[in-house]
Length: 534
Image (cartoon, rainbow, N blue to C red; front, top):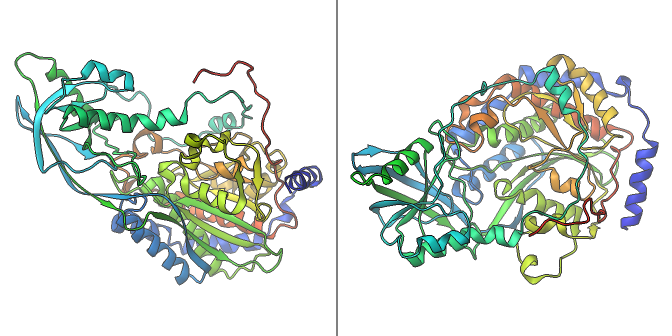
């Protein structure tokens, strides 16, 4: 079957004809623009996800609420086959309350957040701090016998940093031109061992337990009082025993400096009350359809991840993308479109823990990959070894998904789309963008983009694409941080994005031929004959 699919892909690339402006249904686009700009509900959707529900950590009560609410909204709008599609995940986790303060050499409230999937403290705990940077298992020996009854600062303090660039920006024409680059693949051996990388957090937890440490504290990765709280340990067989907290970088550095003094050793008071949720280890992707009228079995798809971290409300990452997906569904359903192919909408779970929801969908419905044959490695989460496993084994539905479009770059307007190296798709996208050039969407880039929910589809030869968006202050100060709230979402940009997404979906669903596909990948020839050391 794999050879047949590869042959079909090659034929599609060779025979795809040019797409012109006449092939785009501009009357339908007029309706999409009117509905999306004059009758938008995208900000109401975004507000419910952020202000009402808040941060949506996978399998937390807030994420369960979001799953239920978004599915009901799809039903309210009249979509079909609305369902929760489960996959194995692990424990949920949520914060009840927390606090941190320095009690000596002076009293000072500190900015802190519990680290996800670490346990509660035993009420309010208090202890002297010790700065003991722990970056690898080899660091443990230096601190053995020195941590009992201590609160351990595990990050190596860095110098403070002041911003040198404007944090909020839109892409210039030059920026957009520079994005159009073809990423030449590098097929070297992986630089990290997935087993070793996963084990260190467990090893550190066990070491601190053995040493009798009260808790561990890390420094925020960003200055400006920002917090994150990202963590691991969601698997049912990975239960941490040492409480962990993150301090604002400025507060952390103050403690570290005081710890170097002889007469002003700091003491820290911590309280973390959290809950684990183990009643259902399955996470859920939420799926909904607008049924097609022909092209039996074929469908186009758009998705964004619904889950977030919990330092704030998960607004630009990624209630923004989720709201745009839902708004595109509402627009098309309100207009009563009857597409040739089914249009499917996906709200993914588990993205923040390793793009797990869309990988589960890929593995279940599109293609799987052969096991490595190593019991330890094959026991790891699927995402840890996915790219290293050959051959790819297409499933029956591999050819049915003809295009997937993803939104996960914050609240900025769409400026174009990454063609992901698909040279046959690029001219088609250029024609589809042309009606929206005046809205700022002009660029088709040949580059590949990563770290979000289209990537595993790309790895098995399914056409998955990520839109180019204005960065605004997404990377500068919002991504995963304690200020990622509704206030930083741009209503005009999200309306524009929903309109363009709806148009792309309708174009892809109604085109006479499916989008050209890349060949199903096979094991690549190594770029470097001398693999990197593990």
